Length: 321
Ligand code: NAP
Image 1 (cartoon, rainbow, N blue to C red):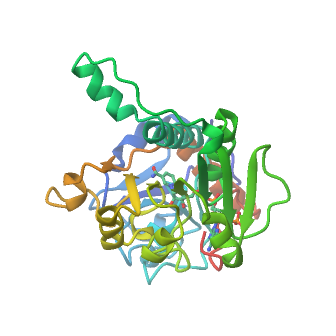
Image 2 (spheres, protein in one colour):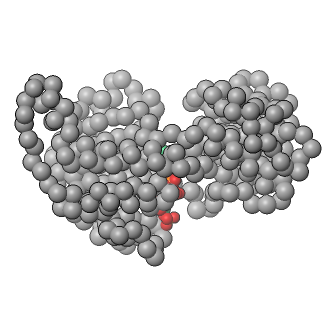
Image 3 (cartoon, rainbow, N blue to C red):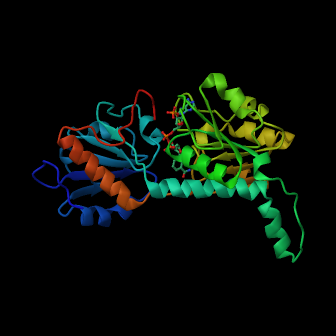
């Protein structure tokens, strides 16, 4: 792809992260947009050149120092790593990534996590290692209720797949959904939260992190699930009140947790989650975005803005996701 904006020369784009090495995007940007002026690392050059910033946990305050910034592009579906910067220039359009590869990856992870627990797959791994032909109890999927909190791009795909496998699926969102898929029951809003949680043997969190959803996974919520439920958190670490999870597992209110996102990442080696056999920790790998998609969406979004158009997937900052 070539950059086809009204701009007379290829754009100047900064790749900003305090968490990861952004060099992995450099070749794809250069192949997609010959002549592009990429800035990354400690020396960003003259800040007034930078027209767009591709970000994953950028240094706080830096975006506010870019006087010609036209686009803030999140590297991810979520934007919580940007809006927690008090100096974020909120007048600059902010876009997130939506990507079929990312959706498929999340879909696979969530189906795996549900099936892994519900079908006792860890027990089979242990039996196999000991050459033991040992059957575990079998419960048909339709007798196992899975609740998906967050019916957006990712949650909806997971709900559909789990319903196809035969699970009794329900989803919860902020606004009412006219129709989901066959076998998926929809709930929305705080008034319907308790009804949504009722009877959920597995609860999946696929909410965005906003002031309303911070600490969503807490003791009160766990108490509304059936005893022995399984929690899957693939949203953000701050959705979860960690001490409440530890207490719920200790009391038996929850049986297991599969966690992919944490308040502190990497999860410190001494963190109790690593050492609890009821908790399966994965290192924020539930899914990944294709680098080429990030590059294409960034170039397309910047080109749209420079034509005076609204870019795709611009986030409503007032709504928070
Ligand atoms: P999305 O398309 O923006 O969907 C968000 C969903 O959450 C929507 O259904 C929305 O309701 C609902 N929601 C938001 N606030 C709510 C509230 N207060 N009460 C009830 N429902 C609420 O987001 P997405 O692309 O599916 O991504 C979801 C999140 O997954 C991301 O924000 C990110 O944190 C996480 N994620 C994790 C990984 C990983 O590897 N672990 C990877 C990608 C994304 P409406 O439909 O009514 O708007």
